[in-house]
Image 1: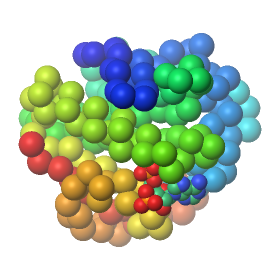
Image 2: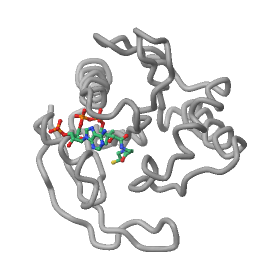
Image 3: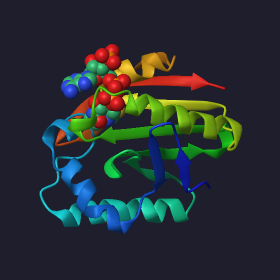
Length: 174
Ligand SMILES: CC(C)(COP(=O)(O)OP(=O)(O)OC[C@H]1O[C@@H](n2cnc3c(N)ncnc32)[C@H](O)[C@@H]1OP(=O)(O)O)[C@@H](O)C(=O)NCCC(=O)NCCS
């Protein structure tokens, strides 16, 4: 599995424990986590735990998360990656998050395009899915820009923050 990807303005590299402080700053912002399946973190240890989980999943080849670095500033600005792979069906699910200060610059589409290219050309993936809460308008705009198709809404499909949430599934075929 690839450990780094360069795009025009960004550098994606496999997430590591040293990123904990910067990622905590992002994952502690309730505006960022509003539509994610985590409550905003209050302790840096929670970021370490999350990174540890991603490291374990990467080792088991079940997922891979990249830290997103803005080339120009060398700042850590978010994360993205493959949340899961369904090997038998050649499908993968993508996830992403950015610090609020970096929203609206087209960075998420830039990262996701790179993940899509890698998945279709190197991993032989046939179908990419993104799961989005219906209220997450910004994320829905991103997948629409990338020509994903809306497949439907799964009612109360995910339990997080002590509630059940509807999930919209968007997909892109090779
Ligand atoms: C969803 C997200 C990754 C989009 O990333 P992005 O790089 O800002 O994407 P874009 O630049 O294409 O902007 C998408 C839309 O966000 C909205 N937006 C942009 N800047 C914004 C800002 N500062 N504040 C609020 N909304 C903003 C715009 O409506 C924009 O659509 P437009 O390009 O048609 O104007 C980002 O908003 C984010 O990290 N959200 C929190 C985490 C999250 O929800 N992740 C996805 C889980 S499915």
